[in-house]
Amino acid sequence: MDKLLTPQEVAEKLGVKKSTIYSWTHQGFIPFTKAGRLLRFRETDVMLWLNKRSKKGRPGRTPQIL
Image 1 (cartoon, rainbow, N blue to C red):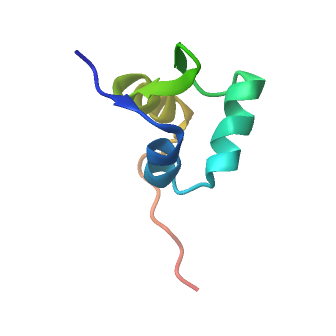
Image 2 (image 1 turned 120 degrees about the vertical axis):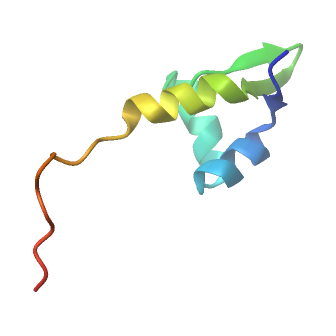
């Protein structure tokens, strides 16, 4: 069974405010579930969502140091 996270735990993991998490759920931006009246997040769903949103650097490129 997947671990369910609270909005506070998700906010801490993502480095954002708890109010941002509530805003994202209201907009349907981040995957969530409701347990009665409680808002919860499946840890694997959040990690998959985060991985889909991350961008990879271009292969073969080296950063230019100024």
